[in-house]
Length: 420
Image (cartoon, rainbow, N blue to C red; front, side):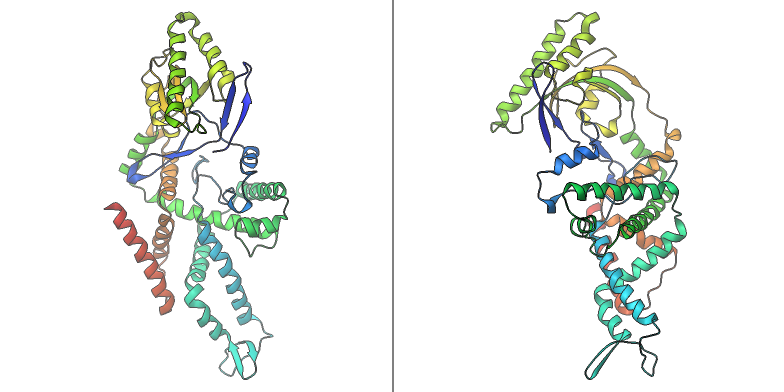
């Protein structure tokens, strides 16, 4: 976790940390991103600072799949299957070469009509020879890429907003390439593994194609979601919206004696509670603001008295939410609250009732689908199998058919073992 140390207006050292994600169990063990109890979203600039001292090969780069819901513009996160995509990029090159060899009128043909791709002394290499050689290793993936592209083009229409998003992704990676002082295409080839990309337009097209395929899967998961699963997801992730103030006393992760560091942080938090206990009720809010400025290690909020608004159960650590939820408005925690960041003292400002299920059903569906995709990488492949079957897929080549069926059977077997 990246962090930078700075002084607050009282001369106290504070530490800024980037977001960490945490998963909570939901319907079908689905998950949604749980943001740290005290942190705000990291900006692009933050990302660049965060990875500056890392080796270029280990940099964690921005997904090239658009983070967007299918319905009513609600935000969500779509899963990007990078290894599979990289394989497809290699396959597309080979497939393009094969198609060109078959379609070009300048390539000579044998008497049976089979095109000659290349010749050496005493040997003609035909298009059929090339196909037979490639299909066992690449044929299944290449065929599925053609099929899935066809389906995606039928089911998803790219909008101007989608195109604008693709441009933003390209601009983002341009900034990253500039930051690492390498050519943009070199960055895409080496850092993302997209070795066949040779121009900015090709990368832009790749982002849009990959995005369309992800949306096809999300739409299918949404359309086939069971009502009981959606309601279970809603119950687990939607809650009252809390506005609170908090003071974080961080447990120093660099302290070699972790138990001593934990104890020191807890004692400091208890001292803050004692100071609040000695404060008149009318002066409580002002006193809390003062203590937040003096003590809190959350530099995102301490200058504003530790204020955080509209917190919901789905995006905050459970111990923090539960402690805040139990408080009355204007009441503070009489005991310290522990999270992965350290110890908190919480003052509840106000709360709003949870959104009704019927009012947020579109968002629930989209987030539920995202949670399934983020939970298990095999969901993407297995869902595509169902979608292809809906389109009556029939594979006639025995080698490709056998490879495809083995892949699906293997993933289904793993899924059954996980459920058991």
